[in-house]
Length: 89
Image (cartoon, rainbow, N blue to C red; front, side):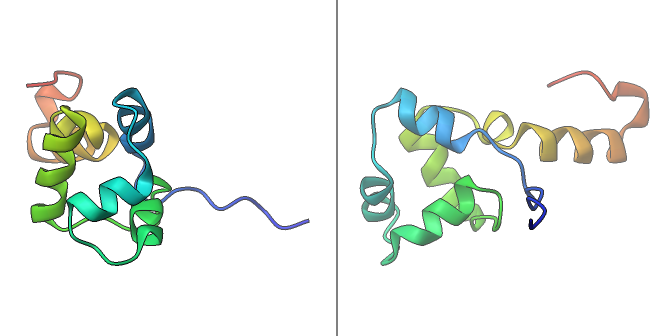
């Protein structure tokens, strides 16, 4: 039985997309990517969107990027300012 691969980039994209009642193909169309599987890769944490697409995802889902990618944001935050590890700015 194959081991389940851990997501490289955990995120909240699926949660906020569903909250807005938007399908993956609609996201793909709105961010102008030709293949909806790319959006699926973003949601599953296999790939990171470009900054441009991350900003579009934030606007579409009505959720700040740092919330969409909270774990990544917190890891950078603790790396850059170890004294404020648990604080979200």
